[in-house]
Length: 84
Image 1 (cartoon, rainbow, N blue to C red):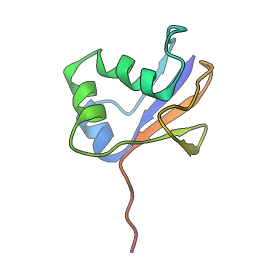
Image 2 (image 1 turned 45 degrees about the vertical axis):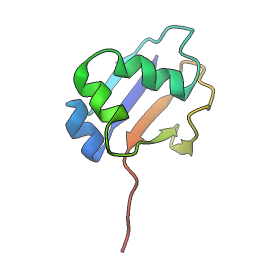
Image 3 (image 1 turned 135 degrees about the vertical axis):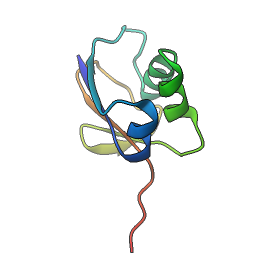
């Protein structure tokens, strides 16, 4: 099982803040997870492939989209942060 957290504008567009999912074995990378989630509904697709860039963290570490998953992670999607 994976836990997926959505933050900031990604959360607003996806219309969900958190979910726990059983993913197919074929969903073995961050990129494949994004595709899997985006196929479910229009809001998820807009959130993950929309105008806002999406950063991904696995177990609280920012990773690239080719990061390999084992199916037992905490995933977070969030837009780039700015500081000041």
